[in-house]
Structure formats: structure tokens, C-alpha cells
Image 1 (tube, rainbow, N blue to C red):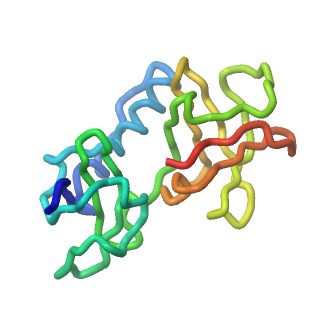
Image 2: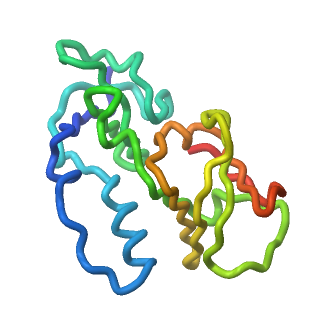
Length: 176
């Protein structure tokens, strides 16, 4: 018995092809960019069902039981609240990459209290990366954003993420 839906988001979806509005603050810009990865049932089309989102991870392509597609499908988002998986065709689907990632402050374990401003440069590491990646961390209340200079695979959310400031590990982010 299938209890959840699998929704395919086309790679040429209007979600990925639109102009950015004018932003009056960095918080507005980061929030808008992060929200572009919040998909709904109406953004794509239903292609299957699943037994529960807890059995899947971002970037996964095996075990989805979706056939007849020109390219493999990959999980690009997981909606735990509505028990819905969003998938995209092809290993270069735009939903598999982003420069901005949003976290809750509850996701972060601070090892060292830095007393830094609400924005600072750091390095990010996880098992997926060959080397540490430079990023900016922004804090706005309970929301934490990591902004990378280049697109990063969303797969990195499946791993424990380590944050380094001046070559010292200062925090970890729990996997998604």
C-alpha cells in the first residue's frame, strides 16, 4: 500500500526560469532563493507513490520504482509534512544543485561560541566534498543560511556538515 506521492518537477519548469525581484535586504534575498526549492504538488505531475519519506534521502535515484523515463530520476526535495517526494530527471537537473541552503538554529550544534556578527565567512566540510568549501553564514533569528560561491549538490544535506572558522571547527549541522 502506497501512502505518499512522488511528484516529478520538469527541468525546464518555470520554477527555475524567472527573474529575481528587487530585494531591499540580504534576508529577503536569501529567503526568496531558499523558497525556490519549496515545491508543491501543482509544480509538477504525479509519477508514483511510496511507503514513507523516511525511507529516502536527497539525491537518491534507486528504489523509486519509476520507469519509462528517458533519464534516471533523482529526489530533489522531501516534504515530510505532506509525505511527498519531489523528483527530477537527469543527474544535471537544476533541482539537484543550489548556492543557498536554509537551516533552523535547532539544526546547528555550536562547539565554540564565536560572538561574531550575524554574517561571516567560513569553510564548510562534509564527506561529499573533496575539500572545504568557502561559504557565508547568515543568522536571522532562528533561520541560518549558508551561501556558497558556486552551486553545491543538495546531496550534502544527507551528511553531517562541519563549519570551520579560521581553521577551527566551530559547529556542526545535523544531516537532513
